[in-house]
Amino acid sequence: MEISIIRTSVTKTELNTMATRQFGDMVKAVVDIEQGIMAIGGELHSDEEAVLLEQGSLQKHLWGINIYPERSPSEWIEFDSMINIRPSGGNRSRYVERPEIRDMVTAIVNRLVQG
Image 1 (cartoon, rainbow, N blue to C red):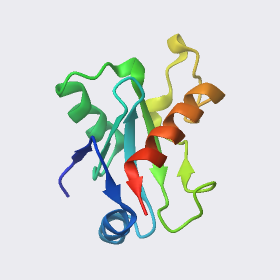
Image 2 (image 1 turned 60 degrees about the horizontal axis):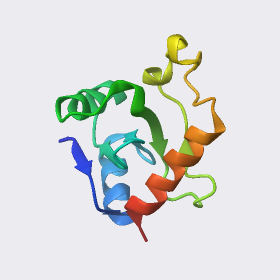
Image 3 (image 1 turned 120 degrees about the vertical axis):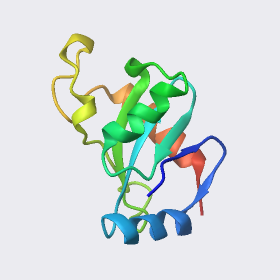
Image 4 (image 1 turned 135 degrees about the vertical axis):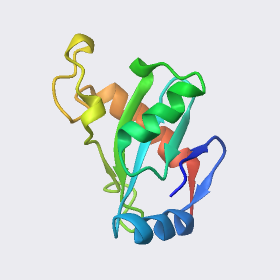
């Protein structure tokens, strides 16, 4: 599946279609908290990360998540990705440990994903 950079919006229906084709109920995404965009559609978070890096994103602003479009908005983001492990930046696990970063990621996803 082709990786898309979402700058304006994507629908839940589109995410559901992607999820069905790839992982069943989930879509992998990488969010750039500096630019307020995300990449979706990759087999691995690292594939999406590479696309964002090629277009000028900085790695320190990129966070990997999983989106479950059928869940309620309070439960649809899973902050779990290998690309989130960066001890030099203070994140020692796959989980996004800083609440303020999770809040930024959530706000961006909620803005970009429409109904």
